[in-house]
Length: 229
Ligand code: DC
Image (cartoon, rainbow, N blue to C red; front, side, top):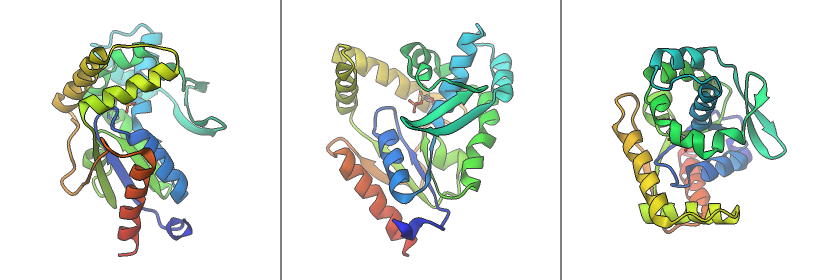
């Protein structure tokens, strides 16, 4: 994909939890030789650190101060992208259900969102980036070159999550997964600061009936169209 190297396109992929953004963004970045920004990992890292330090997540000033002080670094590792918090690799810890369940007030905290802006925008300055999250195309990179909005039906997202968990030997009823995804959708869409919204100029992708390969191909095709325009 040499055609894309040397050009510093910013590509954003926003959408609700479980729509396939992360895997698609990671693979697209690999194919284009771009870096991959997993913005959700930053909100997870702040939440993890606050839980570690027994900070009340409703204390928005305290949590925002924590976010300002933390040293958050992404590092390429053998098992993919790692995230370090003050030098400690917490890539696994931030995916724990305790963190996912606690994240909503942290993601809704305007001070936290402000504190994380710089870290995210630095990625854009390094050159080509595929940035994935909820507010990439609307707030963090409003001038991105190509924006995508990825969705999938609740049923499909819950089934995917169930299969992922089953692969780890964890059985969770579909209805429970649907409820928890719905709750995350609601809190992501309804918060006052940087809610999940479709960027106006976004290209829509409904992944309900697409395989990962098809999603990746679709995104790459659109990016190449833009690059060659
Ligand atoms: O993409 P994810 O599931 O790892 O994100 C974890 C949480 O972080 C998600 O519930 C909402 C929040 N988030 C956000 O508010 N803004 C982003 N750009 C990315 C994630």
